[in-house]
Image (cartoon, rainbow, N blue to C red; front, side, top):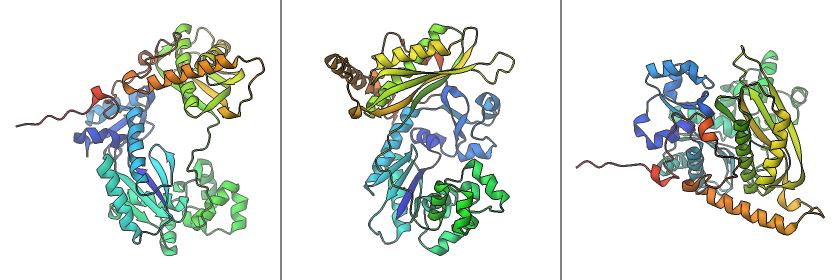
Length: 423
């Protein structure tokens, strides 16, 4: 049996854990730089707000309707996600973390009444973390996704839906629209509707040869999964990432090259820390800069420049040097830059690197120890980014907008929740 645990309105739920007065109230969580709505409570959705709404357009309406608005507090959300996954592992050792708010569970043993067992998992996660989840259980990943959607949509399931018979499978697929199937995508859904296929059951009932005409191998696997044949591989160990990006939209357009240079250096330090955490090294990186596409009255500009590294490295100093060369090629004076970023475009495993004959191995090892020491110090919430290159000057706190950010209740001692007892 395969389970899919999906946290309900995850970002909103994280805020509600430490602000119980938000329960049953409309809540919106904003994207980076307070740009647009990325998560909404059911109460906010009922008021007509939608994911992707630009905040400047809905701000007055949100205030008029008493909506609580939060800047995205991703450090808090990541920590709460870890607590949810830890609780899930107490029921199942094999877990594939699919996203920050979803995880597949693979059960080898039978637990009798799967619905009761699923509801026990849901109750335990809520008790341990305060996060409500929906759990779908079935024989394949795709059907587990379908079941989790039903568990979330219909309160009568009490958080857990099981599809463990062909009758249940067909009934669930009959009630599932084609665009709600995991893996169909925005491109395939209109194509299928033009073929008269509007439900998951209609897709599942197609002849295999017809499926091969309509889809590639990924779509063929999805069709098999809808028919109860498990064929999407498990990824208990996350696959090695091929690219890593850090980018931001700025609070105001940046015209000054020095400000932009500091921001790019900061982004580069972030991706450097990330690849070190995954035991990777970079072979090449790319820097991009862009003006504000919503300012149609002003001149528009976008450019991205790649820079190959002479030797694969995870050294922030070397990565920043390469990023500065790329920025010189991408930058054009006279424009106001609203967004910029750095992408490591090619990563390889650190142990797979063949040392250059002319590289000073002792110096490389010394620098590696230095980077490791910086990462250990900066990993502490109290000392976050305490050590950085002089070229960075910590610009992001000044260049990005987080006017509604909540506290770091779980990772910073000064932000710990306060309880006032009345006599």
